[in-house]
Length: 565
Ligand SMILES: Cc1cc2nc3c(=O)[nH]c(=O)nc-3n(C[C@H](O)[C@H](O)[C@H](O)COP(=O)(O)OP(=O)(O)OC[C@H]3O[C@@H](n4cnc5c(N)ncnc54)[C@H](O)[C@@H]3O)c2cc1C
Image (cartoon, rainbow, N blue to C red; front, side, top):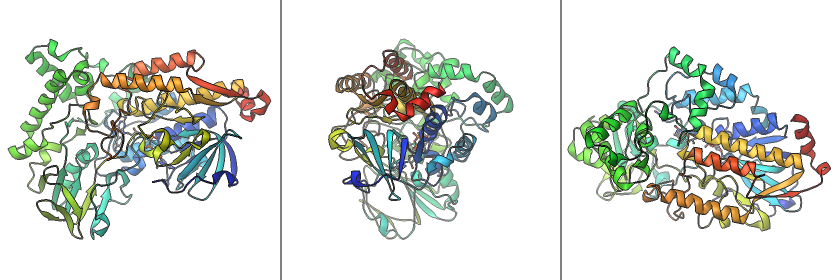
């Protein structure tokens, strides 16, 4: 999987000695670099395979790509001036605007000078003698650093297709997660899109408007609900800016980092209400858009199968109402997994797109794609001749990007060996045996069950506070204890078992990738509970972490940090 082996890496001479290496230049990488360099005074270098900043928003340029949490929440909160000077044009910004925002952040904090773009981290090996990480990159360079920060993202490694022949195809092929910078013109073309997850649901309506014909290959229908995007009026923007600190606080008090409690009372149990009252509650959330239905209607939608089915059937009914052809309506009504057990997609005109006469929906479960041919796609029942294929088949998510690098901890143990039966972490940020590795929004942290920029800020701040704590005390390494990790893995499982999440075949569970161990990789206890646990860990002197020390004068970073604080 990974390009280069780290074997023999310790013989390589490091070209640079740093305090910290950051992998990635998306939301996580940029904030990590800023925080460690500009607040702790460390010598930091970030690497990204992309040739510019942005991460997700650099790679996912497909038509319709946009965030589905309101932009004024889906953004950094760490700098009040930054919040005040940036004005979003829509409630849910499109990819180009989010990318402009991240470019603005990079410029504003002068981050680019410490990022090496177009450079992949191939391996990172912990040297037990020097107690430093040796990091080898695709430009044949090698650096050493005390700390290794993974800002690799949860959705940065596109999944491989499970059919062959893509390279034989003579037409154009695009991946939603690796979309080219130049505009793709579908005019007059016969296009096929493989997959109907969150990205495809955003892209399909816009591609259908342009292409001569669009064939959609769907394996699993999902429960998509309206996004309800609209321009953000100047007075709305001003009102948000006037109370940003308060809003951010309220945001962090919400289960998923989205403060729906300001608009709606989230009720406890769906079955406690009459059918009429439930309908009113569901209607209001559906009409208001985004994640209000799953996260802002009833708490037990995500924990009780009976309550879940009430919400699921409500969404199916809405889908049927919007589609003219009853056969398509049945195909598009989600079944076989609970509502919210896969990443809930948000849509704009998605279902109406199937009322167009240039769009055809294929049930790829009943009629699977066997291979790609020179001219199109071959399924069990029929061949499809197309000019363009769009791959929207998702990601090897959560653990995938880390497992795609040769990372070796104490005793030469690889992360692949350590996570053979599924990821094992402490708080989703550390994994025992890999000292000074901080995994921003790692497996078993709230990550994609939490508004991601907030999840990222929480983790970056946890990591940088821990580093400051170490430097103040002259500690050289910190590592999760095996016991703390065992307890956390058990606690995360206990929390996920209270929910419907394990019942879906999804990237949350690793089951979208053949052979990947089935285990819940998101912490479903909610952001406030998670934040409380982390605060408790910190207040008890980083309980669950073990530190190795050295005399204060040995730690060259320490003096800098001490001077800054
Ligand atoms: C289409 C789409 C829409 C989304 N919408 C939302 C939303 O509305 N709300 C939400 O909360 N989340 C959303 N997400 C999740 C999104 O990934 C996060 O919100 C956030 O952008 C993640 O930031 P990050 O910095 O952690 O990771 P990323 O943005 O994924 O950045 C990781 C970076 O690491 C780099 N990298 C990977 N491997 C290596 C390597 N070996 N060496 C060097 N560099 C490497 C990648 O090139 C990438 O640039 C969405 C994701 C997608 C794909």
